[in-house]
Image (tube, rainbow, N blue to C red; front, side):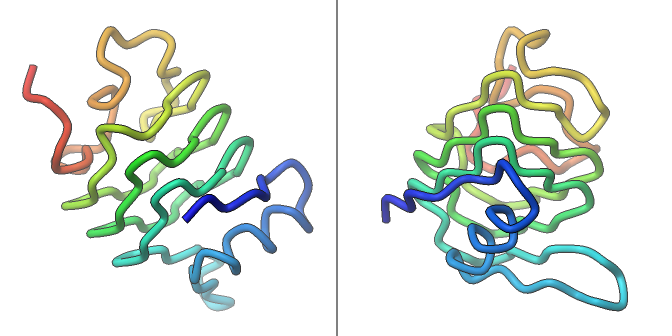
Length: 117
């Protein structure tokens, strides 16, 4: 889809996630991007703490410098996403993992199409 925006400020962050169809829950303070087509989305520098991406399509999305602490990816696709200086759900950096797609995700929460190590 080639989303051009990215998350550098709070305004950019909200605009980017709104543009890709994610919903924000005021009661929980969490973004839900489950089942959304985020292919090619530029999520660079987004703070996606506690967000839900279950069954989302993240193919070709940029997650460079994104913060994914406690973020859920169950059955999402994302092996071709760009993971660089990404903070994984366990607060580790993708640069510390030999296989950035299947790095330090919560138990059972790595994208479904990541290669098995």
